[in-house]
Length: 342
Image 1 (tube, one colour):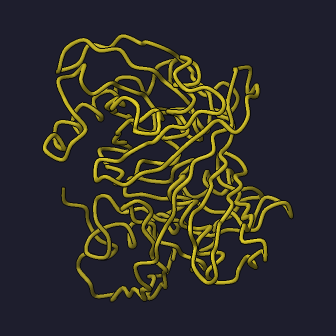
Image 2 (tube, one colour; image 1 turned 30 degrees about the vertical axis):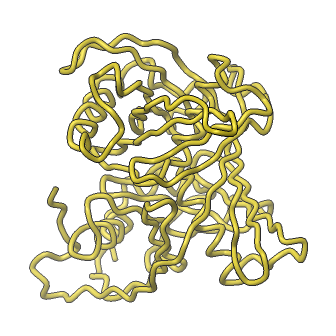
């Protein structure tokens, strides 16, 4: 790629809670940099890497809500591998559902040998830092994955915004990426498929209203700045076991919708709930998605990060392989690396 046309590329596809993740174990392009964060910066400017992203994420091989990752070397020997996350609009700083899928893939393929105890640690370097996952197995099957994310914290609380659906207030929090959080009911909505179009519209509106403001600045690394997405949530009250139960939809990038409860979004949700006292150490958040899939989350540790009181979230879910693909690009194809039609 770069000066050449990409002809073939192989992928393994998974879904986590209904959200796709397309794994490219051997990207056929050079992704330069000493760390995954540096490789993301390189990818943002490199036509060859971006062509590969568009080829796999765009129609007719992908779709407007496609997601995936290019494997890279780790930052150092402390991790098993690195990953550069991508979606239809570019390259993200974090992805919890993708990390869960990668951990399952790593154990199922033997890239990371299974621990006889039934709990195998998979350590991955992502643009926002180093994450650890514990893949739980029973015989040959994966029974669940615990995703231990980077320290997460609330950046701003109760930020007022004037929107097309009236005046609202949002919280802004970091969970590997920065999200705005809105109680959907305050905008006259509910997190249900019937409100799908309206949820996307208000999610995009809030993202772009805040994206270039001080609320969206990461305090330590400007490469992590900007509102990655909007978390719209319903508070469903305690579940039968007394756990905090919420339903959410993450509208990220430019109107892309996460079908899963969103791993980095769940982490930022834990940060907000911890900051307000709604979720305490020892408590559990049952986090449901717009399609009914669930993650559970808890506070693994209370810490200080980047000058903020923070928590280390632990999010639990799992992923399933959906197929293996060998994509081709005919040099005569008039659509080339594809298009996005929403």
